[in-house]
Image 1 (cartoon, helix red, strand yellow):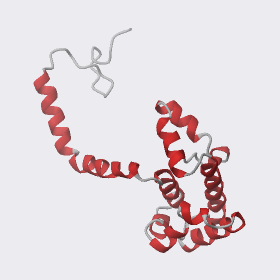
Image 2: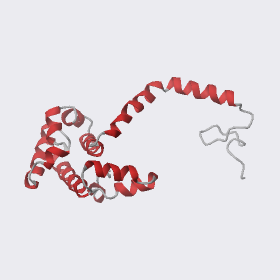
Image 3: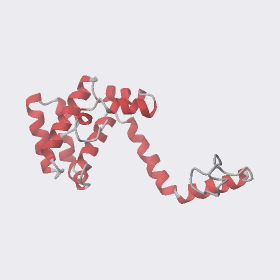
Image 4: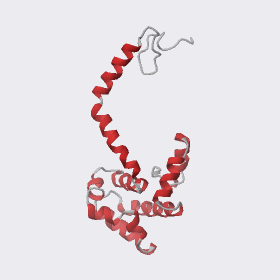
Length: 170
């Protein structure tokens, strides 16, 4: 009782590495992992530039709603420029508030997004929330300034979607 997994012969990720493993062995393992995971690392690095988008939060929110429940919504909404342009933050901001829900619902339906009426309400509620924060750039700044996982979690709980059965989006 009280012994570590390494002392018990455990070899899982939580096992403590014995002191006899040299820095050279660790370096070789790290190099092999980097080689084996190169494609995944390159993909993650390539996506990092997306963070500099002024509409980062809005763009990823739309992607999330487009794919929630079915991945084909991405092709119809994000991957179809005419549909995507109809739901950019600026496009919705230029509409009277009385027309936003209809435009979002029609676009989600045309894009074959699952549950278009329900998601349209969430998207418009998130639009209103982001607008109250000062727009997409201000909302992104608030998200990025939220300290650690707890802060980002608290930020996401402000989302209109978090008050429903739908997972928090931001």
